[in-house]
Length: 114
Ligand code: 5GP
Ligand code: ZN
Image 1 (cartoon, rainbow, N blue to C red):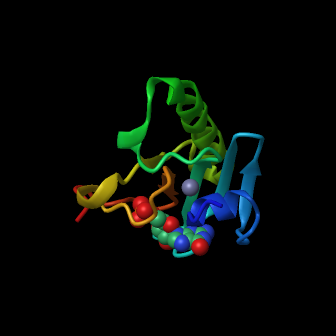
Image 2 (image 1 turned 90 degrees about the vertical axis):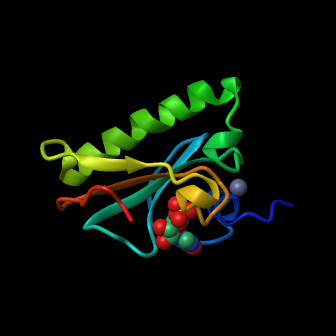
């Protein structure tokens, strides 16, 4: 039994506002949005962070990025753009140890982040 929050969301054991789902990916709105558009795209496979990705995960995570930009377009970010972020481990500010790509848009975002 996987004791991971995003595995539970992927399995439907914890509810989420879904944006997109297929057999290997899930996109859902962030519970605490930091921008008018803020959703997460995860692989259903448990990979704890980007640092734990293997060469075999390249295709899966490539498809995840492709899907993220398609969804960003659907959310109205195609023209003005968006930010696509993988927070990774402690220094990267990752709080949920299951790979997720943040997509933030709908406003101008500051750089550098805190
Ligand atoms: P991290 O800090 O790991 O990069 O991002 C984790 C994100 O997951 C945060 O933006 C946080 O708001 C979001 N989050 C945490 N728990 C839940 C939850 O139960 N449901 C949803 N939809 N988002 C969550
Ligand atoms: Zn997981």
